[in-house]
Image: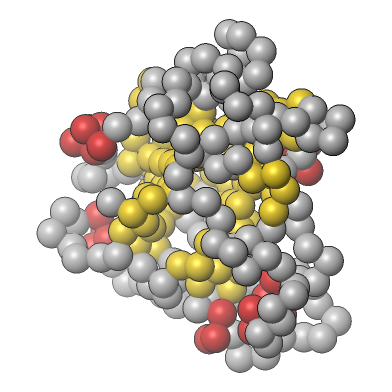
Length: 228
């Protein structure tokens, strides 16, 4: 993009704003960041095994607003980079939460893969790997008021745009220190987190499918964020 190498999610390369998100959301600063919700889908059909047909991307700093205490499902989907036969491993890290790793798979994720999810004893982590040409399924509870980064933990990849921003329950944050740019707020204790793994649980489910592709010069990477 503009002659620079970038990564993008849902065809948007993350570029953090000058004003901290928490203050912008808490105090209603509409010009603090892009108020448009980030894309929830990518162009279909999309062959994750081949370089993308459309090499263009944009920059953005919009926020995925999550319902407080909602259960969120995330599908991280990897794809071919711009060059043929290139797909990298990415360790994705979520700030402010731990999540259950429900499963891994090869190729493009489909809803049929849900029957393979480990709903009995999934690992509980804050970082999970997305393998080349594969997908990783995660679940977490949006129970920690604040604004949180979700990004590739390979630092250059983050600085090149491979990340998204999530917000939840910001109205519950009682006071924001004027001189603080990065804040941490303790989660409310969940006494039995296994309740969120029960198939019979009724919850607001958000599925985020992210396809990350290497970008160089007007490149792009598609990904999906959608409700099931």
